[in-house]
Length: 393
Image 1 (cartoon, rainbow, N blue to C red):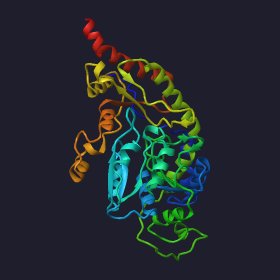
Image 2 (cartoon, one colour; image 1 turned 120 degrees about the vertical axis):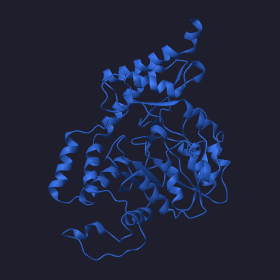
Image 3 (cartoon, rainbow, N blue to C red; image 1 turned 135 degrees about the vertical axis):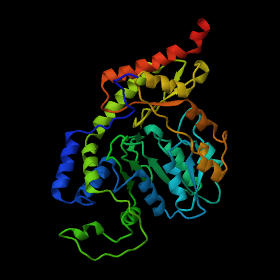
Image 4 (cartoon, rainbow, N blue to C red; image 1 turned 30 degrees about the horizontal axis):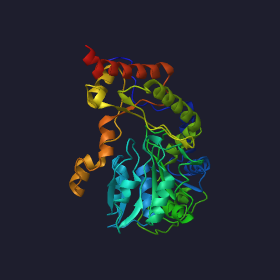
């Protein structure tokens, strides 16, 4: 193993984040408070939406979104199988059923044509997931949703600062959930944000994220606050504390420069692997689409190689390159398979993408030498394992 191991991810944090945390500690107010509120305002301004509600995860943001639309037991929500479990699991917490859908041919995002086959009288919403930061075709999704009278809740865990036809993701639907998990494009360690332009959704989400308490209940321990509050509903405990919000605010100020660096790395990867029969780059996006580049998902072409994906990853690891796999489709996991009766072969496009995908390191802290090492290592594994080389020998 190479001692100079390039991890799949390194968080890009520095003195700004350290100073922000110190200021919160010095203030003696650690939980949800003025810093979290300021982070929400800055995030809403950055995205271009009316309301941003800071929470402790993207899963929490999705939970509040489905609560806002009144998701009920026996309702159904259309969800891509090619996603992380949180996208679908949160639906089951309402007693509703996630209806899994295939990916677009040759890509990762939800296939609306496949989703339409799965609509029933119980279908209440669709949850598009912007895999890797590549925006879904939101115009098609909104036409589809209007046709069947469905809510659209976007899972934008990967999609900051993705854009769709002149608008940032986070403004294209009534409810959108973002993630600030440790590996995301900006991080608070753990955390998330719900965005909406709907005043009623925002008011309910703000209450439900903190036990269903009325008003600015977090102020009840502040000088200007009141001890009196009312519990309006059986809410949750999903709020973001000021300590994490201070990191998020510092990270948000770097979001554009982070994206610029991620995009530059992605461009180098694409150029390096373009035209190689053994590899397939991520799907190309139109000029009016901004890819967030949370992930760079490379796909191997199995017909041209004499090794499978697992061996390819292991050989990269031996060369000191960390990678990951995004994602194992939900219908292949025991819970979804056994509870809902899915079997291998149900979603061929998602299965094809999964069987060939490798996520390469892509983060702002990567230097040019490291980017070059990743490229050279991938090419070396291809060179050692291409079928044409075996035939020629």
